[in-house]
Length: 197
Image 1 (tube, rainbow, N blue to C red):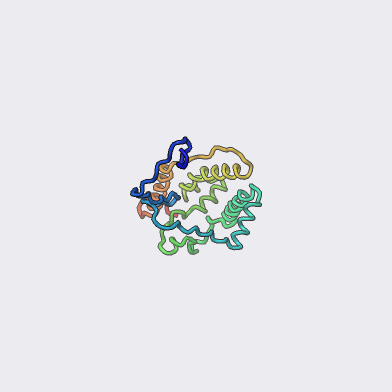
Image 2 (image 1 turned 90 degrees about the vertical axis):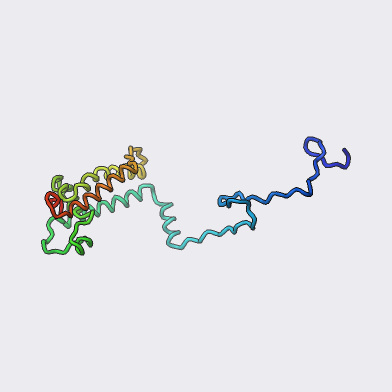
């Protein structure tokens, strides 16, 4: 026993076979190649230092109260509603140029044409007229309103309001219906001409 290498169980250690091939080092990192790693370890790049503006925005976001983002989003919504109320898009001059670029260049209604007028009629309680100008917007408005209230309430006050979950299939069907509506409202035959705004 004296003079021999022993293992943890007091048995003589086996001598390594000089003719055995040692296994190459296997790279076990997150980007490990398909085979054994043969070269040096990859260089670890230092993260790019953020600029001053980004750091300022991150500091403001970290210090802002939880209700700041919902309040800013609500302010944007209120500005949009105020614009629809003040501008009164239903009383535009018949000879005025369209504000929609697609309609200005092609004369065709875009998928969103009539949305501002529909919103104006919704704010005045005239749902039939609103649906006449953009009934898909009127259909989606309650869902959009509830999504915003649930998100803002959870973010600002911690309310656990049930949020509607839409499957990809439902979203795809809605977008397909929107596409069909966008094409149908530009067809020059009755009854599709009643959808033109």
